Image (cartoon, rainbow over all chains, first blue to last red; front, side, top):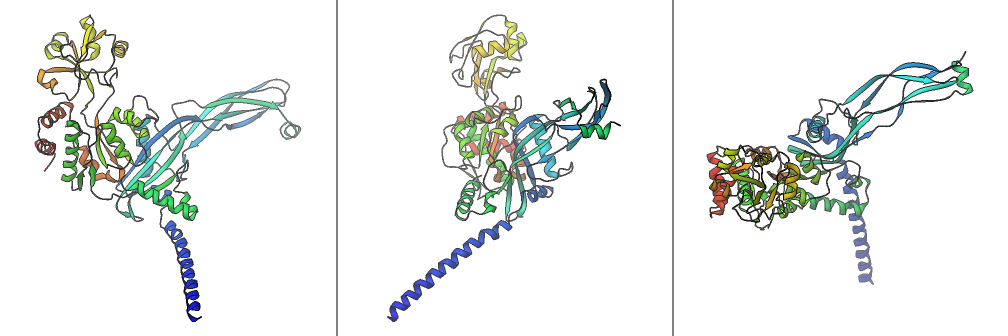
Length: 207
Length: 292
C-alpha cells in the first residue's frame, strides 16, 4: 500500500514537474520577444552601424489617391462662371515601418542611393506641387479640382552590419521594406468636376 | 547566409508550437519583418570546375585572408557557374565567383530594370544574398578579328564590320555555346550578314570566350558590342550577407579595376597549363600590389 501511494505520489509529482516545465517554456519566448529590436530601432541603428545597405527588389510608378485641391467655386448666378483657382498639394514619403523620413537619416540615404542607382529615379522626402487651374461652374452649380499625384514605390530589404553585437547579433535584416513618394518623372491626374448646389449650399453661399 | 536559413526554420517551429503574436512578425508576407543572421565560421568559398572560376575563387580567398578574414575552400565540386550560384542561394556556399547573365538565367522570375544590370541582379536575388560590384573582366562571348584586319579597315566594333561590304563567315570555339549570338540577331542589330561556319577557327570573324588564350596567342582584336547583342558576363562575388561585411567588401573590391578580361585570360591560361590556382592568384595579387 505504502509502495502504491509512493508510486502515485511520484507520478503526480512528475506530472506537476512537466506542467511546471511547460509553463516555463511558454514564458521564455515572451521574454525573448522583448529582446528583439523593432524594425524602427533597426533602421535608426543605421546611424551607427558599420554597414547599412538597402537592396531593392521591385519598383513601380502609380497614381496616388485623388482628392480635392484648392477652393470650391460656387456659382450663384445665371450664367457660366469661370475662374482660375490656385492650389498647392504636398506629397510626403511614407513607408511600411512607419519611421519618419528625413534627408539626413542614414537608412534613408542608403535607400535613396540604391533606388536612384538602380532605377534612375530620384527621390524627394517631400514635394509640393503648385498650380493654377481654370474652373468652370454652370449656373447654380459648384465646381472643384480633383488631383491625384504621380507616385513611386520601391521595395526591398535592408542588411545592417554591426561591429559589436546589437541585441545579440552582428547582422540584422529588415525585409519587405517599402517606401512611397512623389514621382517627378510622371504626370499626376488633375480634372475639374461640378454638380448642382444643394439648398443648404445655396443658403450658405448665395445671398 | 549559411547561418540564416536554419535559424529561420527554428523560429518557424517555435512559432507553430506557441502561436505567439511576436512570432507572427517573423512570417514573411507584405508586412515588413526583421531577422538576424550571424556568420557561423570561416567564409566557405566555392567554384565550378572551369579554370576561370578556380582562379577567381583563389583570388577571393587570398584577398579575404590578407584582410584578416578566415576562409575555407569548399570540397564539393560544382560542374557549372549556375550550380555554384544555386549553392550560394541555398546556403551551401558563402561566396563564389558568379557571372551576370548566368545568375539571371539560374534565378529567373525577378523584375527587369531595362539597361540596368545591377538593379536586375538585385531584384533576382533573394533576401540575404548580395551581388557585390563586378570586376572589369568578362568571361562571356566575344567576336574577334585579326589585328591586321582590324587596323586595315578601322574595325573597333561589330557595327564596323559593315565597312567590309560583304557576307562574313562566323565561327569559332564558342560558336556552339548557348550564349553565342545568332546570325539573325547580329544582322538585326548591326545590319551585317554572317554565314555560320561552325567551330572552325578559319573564319572571317571568330566567336570565342573573352578569356580564351587564342586571343593573345593569335593577337586578335576583340570587337566592342555597343548594341548589346551579347549578354554581359562580368565576374563578381556572389556572397551571403553575413559574409559581406565592410572589411570583406573592401577586400574583394580591390580586384574590380585591375582584373580585366585580358588579365583573367592570362591567369586562366596558367591554371589550364597545370599551375595551382592559389599560387597563380597570390603571385598575381603581389605583382599588382594588392597583397602584402
